Structure formats: structure tokens, C-alpha cells
Length: 258
Image (cartoon, rainbow, N blue to C red; front, top):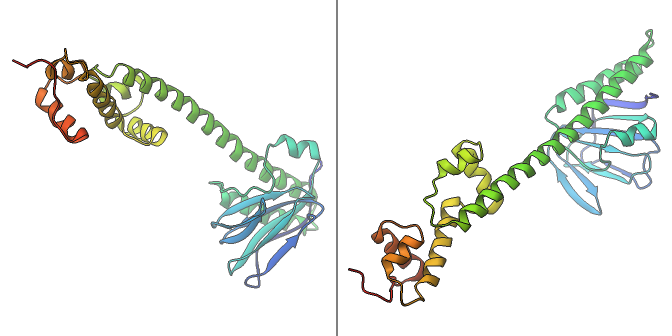
């Protein structure tokens, strides 16, 4: 592959609040690493980047970023084959926060050293360091996509369990059984469930049981105790307490409970 750095800098400090504005891009590919917070304009909006942000630009991409107020960055301008760059699936103009940012930043230093070196094979070594930077950056997005896919699979599994739980609301569900069926620890299952649905499983189950109890008790042929059992409550006093908490009045059936 034809990789060639054309201009690079490692941890370069500019004047505070310095502005880089290239409305028509820089004419080459660009990798940037910001060890400090920076203001970046993307999709027509200015956002504040956290420290350790990275970003790639394609040759014609709009670029506008400035200090906050400090301006420190590492960068590599480079040429590469368009098909290869597109195959990396790195989104251009989109800031990202890789866990291996220190490695990426150090690769910029390696590229800079070889780029200005007159030693044998320096151009090849600079190209290899650049290729490694690109591949590690691409891996970040591959891992991210894999995590999102896995997350979707987990969500589908928990959604199925949730549907079964709320459909069979009278069953004596426990957190341990739900977690075991999802092949998770109780704490992880609880965290995932709450993240996906915004409520705890026990709270959703209780809400469903209360709604069903209220509907059941419109049938005046049903006693309070029968309604409680139909909704999964073996303890009548627990049922009465929850019902009053939800609806402000105690449950009333159509037949006297003896």
C-alpha cells in the first residue's frame, strides 16, 4: 500500500485560542489527537471535545477547531489510496475516544522521527508506523460495532424474558431465575434491564399485577382473595397494601371473603 506522511507534529502547542479553519479541507488525509479539550465544529455545530479525542479528516473535509483556551495537538497529514482508506471503515470528521490513545499518540512521534530522519529505510518505517496507526484506529470502530451488536443480542434476549414475565405475571418470578435464564449475574441482569427499559423488573411486574388486579375486580363475581391469587399474590395482606398504595383505596371484591 502507498502510505506517505507529508507533514506531522507531536504534541505541538499553539497560542491559546488559536483557530484552524479549512473550509475546503487540507487536500490530504489528516489524523489529529487532542490531549486537551478543544472546540470542534462538526455537522454545523460547535462542540467541546473531551481530552484525548482523535479525529480523521478526508482530503476535502471541512475543518474548524480551536483552543479551549489551550491548543495542543499531535497530527499527521498523509496520502493513501482512497479504496484502502474506505475499507478501514473509519468515519471521517467524527471525533472518537480510543482506549489506546497513548499508543496512537506515540505512533505520531514515531512517524515524525522517521519522516525527518535521513537514515536508511526511514520512509518505509514511517509508512509502517502510519499503517499501524490506521489499523489500530480501524480496530477501535470494529470493536465498537461488535460491542453494539452484542448489546443488541443481549437486549433481544432480555426483551423476550420481559415479555414472558409480563405475560405470565401470576408466576412467582424471582430475580435469580430471570438472571439464570439470561445466563447473567443478578447484578448485570438488573443493570441491563434497567438500562434498556428504564425500570427495575420487580417494579414493572408489580405495576402489571396491579393493573390486572384492578381490571379483575371490576368483575363482581370475584373476591379480593381470588384476585390476589390470580395476580400472583399468595399473601392477601401484601396484596391489599400494594393495591392501596397504587390506587389510594383498599381493594373491594364482589363476594365476601371468609
